[in-house]
Length: 370
Image (cartoon, rainbow, N blue to C red; front, side, top):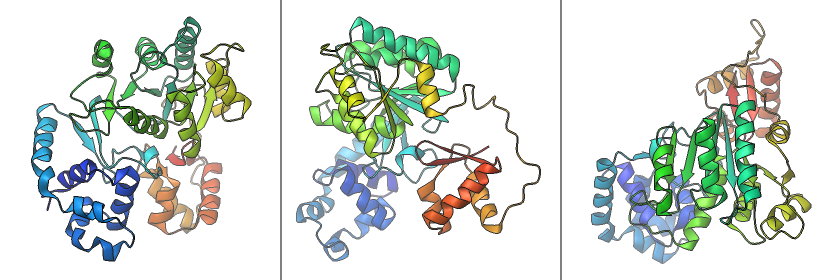
């Protein structure tokens, strides 16, 4: 039996055959990873249909030495771990059915900044793609300087996004497809080091995890889940960036793409996203900000005119006081669960609070106090 919650989560994270969806389902059913292990011998009675392999894996002690080494690695390198029970866990990920139960990070990562944009694209970026990436991020900083840029530290558009973010002054987060004991590709190590001062590196993978193909798909879902919107700069017909765009759609995130020349192999993916109405067409940061309906100033500096002594119903007061507790925002699903208010009624209450200039509903189903 793991001796604390983090150890239990790391063990659960390590077990093969359960997967992120299965692990999150078990976690939600029992409320903690330790509780899963306490009941592991009775899981078949509690959760009909759970596989024998999963139960056997939970009862297997061969992971103990590996987890001890992982905990030593985490402590030695000052790695930060966040779980769904932590207030710093990304609020945008809480609604995602396959969200990781543990995220590891290095640097100064703030998961819950007011605005987050994922930028992805081909690994074989053309001069056009690199230019559009840098121009977009530079213009975006002039319009909305309070954004965090998320990408995957890969070759091409990913690394250009991180470079342009550093140049513009945006915090930038690189989501990795491996553990924090390595940087892949190694050529990006200097940029990764620069990112640590304002932003950083994030992964769901423990050390000694190598960057295999399926890990990049899992990485892509975190990029999409952390973002209010995903922007595809350049993409071939088959590309990981298209997978990220597709996942973003399933998470109800906004998706945008820059168009390219007809017949250009590295614009086919973007053009098809736009043609099939899976992404909005943008040609500049101004287009993007307008489409997102974002105020073209920092939210920190934006004057907010609240009603003087607004009259609130008891239910409005209850909802407002709950939202006030978290400056980074509260998910609508969290309000529904904690306050036991059905969605149709809660939606009406939130609309009333927004009209009274007390809250703002943002992309990603977040409600934030003003």
